[in-house]
Length: 112
Length: 113
Image 1 (cartoon, each protein chain N blue to C red):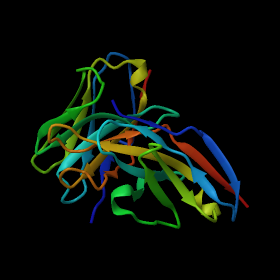
Image 2: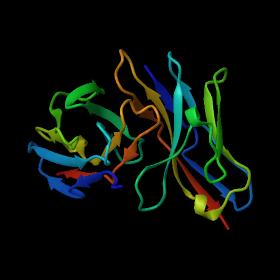
Image 3: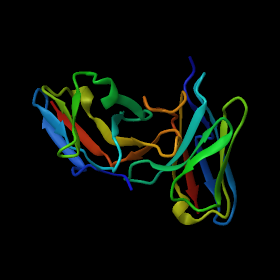
Image 4: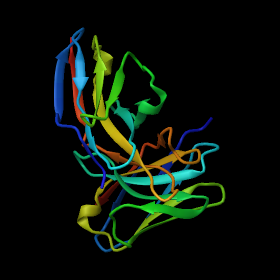
């Protein structure tokens, strides 16, 4: 079975400081991983996806298969980055479409 | 381009009742998934529909059922409501397999009393 673990429920940093949100996964297949973000009073939205190898809003995430990790990083945090962040693993079997397994989320607060 | 819309936004039901939640997928999206998000938890996969057929199911009892219509909109039905069914129910849509991710609706907040 697949599992996503986000060890930090809360993370607080100061503006301009580096930030790293941790995500570890367990999956027997080839993983496709995502980070979703939920800003206050807004819907869950896709931040970035491993398959696209992109950088969004200054955030990057590298898949480390040896450590089974997909940590989200940003070198200089901004106050507008304050939000709930969810790591998600995309999985599918038997030719079916992909589904998502989410971690429990990390609430990031960026202080002025 | 319209996003994913869900109705109603809030709902209060009594234990034992039945409820139907509705979702209109984003234009052009033919795969719809439903997730349950309990307080303080990440979304949990309920089931998925693709071309009007169930295409995978999570660890939820049969009293959770669904439908997808020819226009790709979808319903989630829950029978014999229990107090633990109180949660935010999220609908998400994608094109085809969903390998590039899903677009989520704002959710329906269900409270069972």
